[in-house]
Length: 183
Image (cartoon, rainbow, N blue to C red; front, side, top):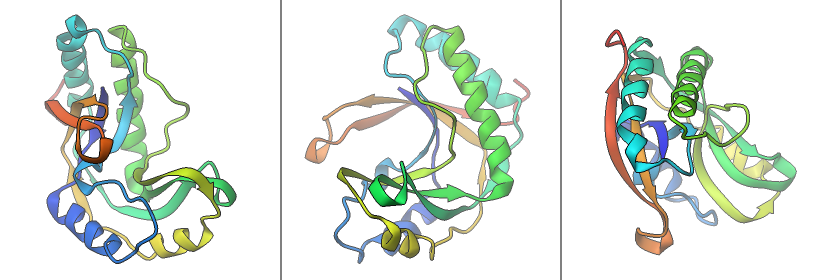
């Protein structure tokens, strides 16, 4: 299960069109693109309602904000990249970081311990089986920037591993939680 920010269809379609002719990389299905705020590998079903309520309160305390996808990056580093991603503009970093911290806190309170290290706002584009030298790919990805869009909600999403095509996870949005509702 994870908490995320989704992409509007025009941004998703524009990025998919940009990546389509760029072969040789295992691009993630555009339908699964999102910015993860918190990932919880295990959430007890009985606690899902409480988690949703706490996430709604946290989201309600953050005003909607503009975001632009821009700047390529990779994990762990360009000489041995295993994940390629796009970052976000400077103006969106602070509200995204706040949402991530609030989402992680809500998860902790409900016993759904979030995984991961320090939050790095990004949209994962490709996961590689073996690390590569990625400088060329980062230069290509750096040429694309999205139009700005308004983030006005976060989503709580269940992930069912290996249930979609090609062994990919199937995602089901359990709740869409509006920002700025006063939570």
